[in-house]
Image 1 (cartoon, rainbow, N blue to C red):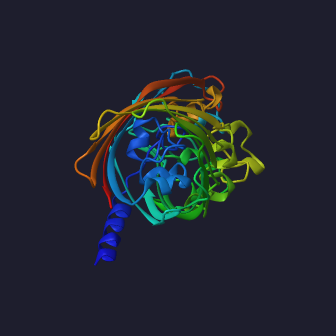
Image 2 (cartoon, helix red, strand yellow):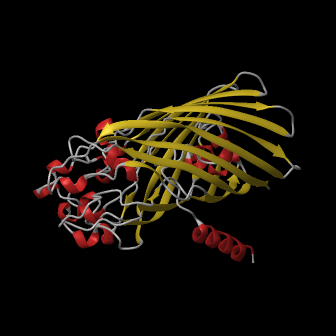
Image 3 (cartoon, rainbow, N blue to C red):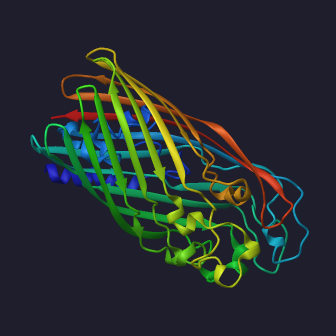
Amino acid sequence: MQLKKTYIIISLLLTTQSPCLWATNGYLAHGFGTKSKALAGAGVALPLEGLSAGTNPALMVGVGNRFEMGLSIFSPRRSYTADDNGSSVPPPLGPATITPGTYDSDKEYFPIPYITYNKLLNEYSSIGVAISGNGGMNTEYPTTVFAPFNNPYGQASSPTGVDLAQIFMGIPYAYKINAQHTIGIMPIVAVQWFKAYGLAPFSPFSNAPESLTNNGYDYSYGGGLRVGWFGELTEQFSVGASYQSRLYMSAFDDYKGLFAEQGDFDTPPTFTIGTAFKATPELTFLLDWQRIEFSDVAAISNASDLTFTFGDTLLGTDNGLGFGWKDTDVIKFGVQWEYNEDWTLRAGYSHATSVIPSTQALFNILAPATISQHITFGFSHLLDKQNELNLSFMYAPEKTINGTNPNTGTQTGSIQLQEYELELGWSLRF
């Protein structure tokens, strides 16, 4: 009966998972778990919760026996401005002109659930399961974004947008080598689904125009591995580090004419290292550094310049058009104050280097990952010895990237993004 209940809960999670949008650092979440999100995503060196496995699987012995579930309401505010100074060059460059004006993307509120379970096998080891969304993209503009005039290379249509949703399930195992050092490993299984619409004007630049746009949802499967280390060097000072491999995914066959490498869209590798310093028994400071290597994924990092998209650089080929993203470094700072036995307060701040160069700004209308700062706070409240309520709030101030449309040579404009997220979680200790 207990197994059946668990299966039902997981099935509901999988079927109700919403797209996690161009959220936070590129398209990766700013943190994993309600407590970590209240600390701006810091926590690689501090056991906090079930989703700490998503940051560092070595933390799970310290997390102990618990079942957790939660829900966030994520609200991205995306928009773009295109100036009325586009090129009058005839096709093939002309169709790359972007509709002049300022437009907001629709759909501003999205529910994102998670569920975790962790079990101590003995005093030295633990095993668990963690299921959550992690990153993704979603934009929908109620206009014909590209090629606002008739052209022989494909009729523009509205709305224009993309939608990528992802689910990740990890099985974290942690082993305590001695009193100071713990190691962890977490195999990851991933499922993602994607659709694009309104991109017909790009047909002449695709090696498979029938697999470019307006094909509904296509599904992709794959996985990878996260490993970690946690060191309790003194009673006050701890250090942690983790590495997540590139998650290798099967290709989106229905969009092999859009994404580089014949529809390939993997999740980039990440590396995180950080510290936790307990200044007093009640006050803990956290500092993490994270590196996200978007350059490993051609669909994300290839330049978005149609001028050179001929021959072996057509959309869908190995060197085909991408979003032009760079690798990013993220610094995360958090503070946790155990106010009393029942209440713990948290706050955090993070800053990331920009992933979008100004020369790639206007094509990233479909993926306006401009955010560089996160301001967060939250709390935990013990309801009784077993039950705990957790809350986090995130605000990402609006950031604008100005640039030039490289495919007209003259058209200028900007992309903007601002984000809010409220997450509520429940934890059962046993």
